[in-house]
Length: 416
Image (cartoon, rainbow, N blue to C red):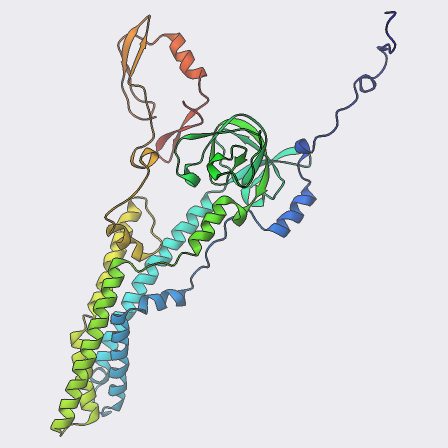
């Protein structure tokens, strides 16, 4: 062509005709060296676990009850009195009361500590079984890593069905929607888009360009840059608030504490009166008066009450475990039983959040009835067969999948 000033010669290499594109940092992600440095500096992407209580602290908690403390004091007094008695008496005659009280207190503490440690062991086993992974771009290629190794500025590849492992800022997105009920309590889908960006002053539920740890992706795909990990995520901030909460005594604990305090003062008063009366009457040694006072106190104290309470709560914990509910501490069993009002969101909590078609209509076949409940692939169509076009439309308008998980059927993805 006569007007061409830069003719293209077919013999030239293609890279001379079309210059290579400028590399995009998003496509390459962090290098392995950068990731290791940030992981060492920021720590793993996991929520800090509360400090584990040692066995000594658990035993002390089991003993920190007015009734138990009263029994321990009575056991000590009985033991001291046994030492002061004549050595000609038998061992059981001298220390029988102290040994009996000690056995009851030890049984109560053992049952409480055993049940709590058993529940903690079960929870830790479940946590080890559930390993969350994430798809990231490292060194210019896609790789799958444990979610605990995510660091800020990692580039995540997101798709439907993924569990978001860290707070992230969207870079690119296509038809993205997430389920944020675990964070905000809202069961409806939240539409997400990379633009326009929002800032920290925007309410949490309105940050459409952000993904949050603990939520799930229902539909769409996206690339996102990790913005916060571990305790710095929004979920981690909620955990920090919960750790600062001072636990209140359960109704049963408060009642036992009041009852134990009343019994303690009554027994102490009666014992002192008995000792004073015996001293005024004369003819008895101090050791005999002390033993008589301790015997009165031990007889008045319901020493079986702490053990019976612990055994009852332990049986309740085991019954809940058989139904799939793990309880970390015995007192939580009684707390749940004492609840009179539960405030909760309906959808997904009281109801199963499962909507299924029971009747369908088309011009060619009319109305048909569809039997079956939930997402289980069981049921039948009553009436004329459904038109193929209707089935194609229902298939193409969603990207959900039905999977059998833990003995039940669940829909993963957008089935709306």
